[in-house]
Amino acid sequence: MSLHKSLRSGDALKRQRSVLKRTERIEILRKEKRFKDGETSVFGLPKVRTVFRVRKTKPGAKKDEDDD
Image 1: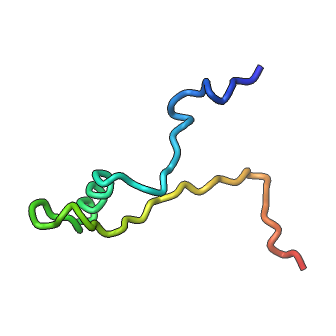
Image 2: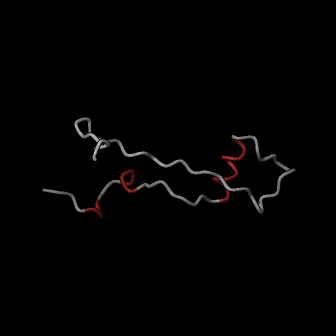
């Protein structure tokens, strides 16, 4: 019997978001050393690139690149 999608565990429902919260953007900028406490304003932050997961293909599946 299958499990209803509303009853999935919390980890299965987490997704990669394309928009980050201000605190998340500041954390990323700090890691990249583009944000300095006390010097940089929290308003007008630069854009931060989000990393999307790449779907893995099945080992037996191949792309048809040589279609004529």
